[in-house]
Length: 212
Image (cartoon, rainbow, N blue to C red; front, side, top):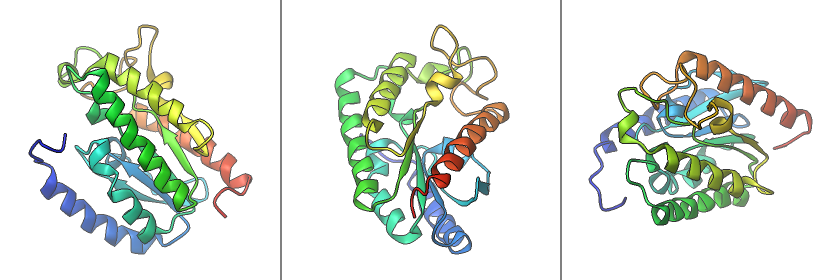
């Protein structure tokens, strides 16, 4: 995807400024929540005992996020991190070979957390909801395949896995009705569920002393 023009670059620059300002308020030892618009749209200031530094970038894909992660880790000095990226890699007509490349970039991102000795909660991209405004631009099959790859990458490496794809899906693999606003972006209901899943996970990890 590096050959494509990037219409999100001005927004990402603004996000860098906002994240830098917020970083000073959060301080070290918090939760670094890294990812795409699903993260940027999350408004929780605290999960469990940890203040949240929201490092979400709308429109970002896995390859574009990868070089930002070590810089964020160095500047934020978090106790824990959560990672949610991949939705923008699962566009319509996405091939399995393209997903192989995405998985390789995702593996590199996980390695950045390992190198920094920051435990990371890996989250899978949620499923696509049918018959909504953005549904046709994404591939439900690619989203499911990428979510499985991400879950596999997390095994034995991540502090925990939060499987949004499984939690938000109905029997046919699509998102349950009401989980999104437009087929992709999460509804208030879905954000409440995601917050509860993170709350349980982070509470368990901090009780075990992860990230000290």
